[in-house]
Length: 250
Image (cartoon, rainbow, N blue to C red; front, side, top):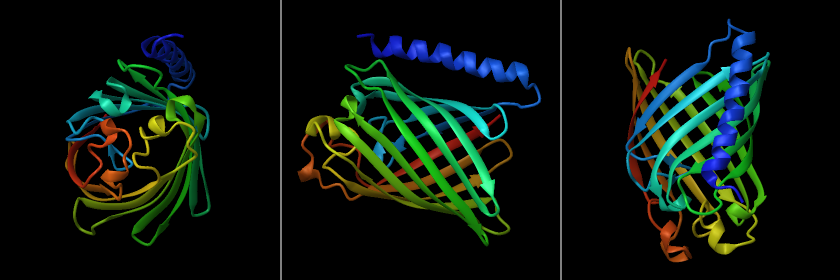
């Protein structure tokens, strides 16, 4: 079996080819590039960077009409949750559109991990819809990873989130509530994304926009019970935490 690094190299080459083609064909469509630095990389209430500071770069490339492809790279700092991986890469193809007041999207996402031990990569389907209610944007999102050996089963995540700007200020506030569940084939492997089994997560954050960047401060928590976690390595970094960050867009 090829190593994770080899798999990533192949995917990266393919992604680069996909990105180059539309850029050459559509010079008028410029890619978007974002850079983030956070005190802890939290995903669905769980730390993916072992509670350490992390950096992230995201590139979004429009293709034709409502289609786009994107790539995201995140430093994971040898995260135990992901087999000691040093970095994680998300490669996605997305279709997004809007009908009247409802916006929606669907994506296929490949999660690739470099520098970790064992098979770690997995594929996930994502979709969501949202609308604007007065000053508030509301979105309902769902992600489903079909049963895969690297996850010890399937994983189903759904989430509702809202965000609103505070009138007359550069501040935006956000809140979310999510739930993770799924089928279990291997108890220990399923602890990777669902320590202790099915759980809820929630968060509240504020962003302050400046001319060159956006600063953020967020609160994250879950209802995971430590005494229900079967795999000790996944027991850390799921409790309440404050996360600070800086976001740059180019």
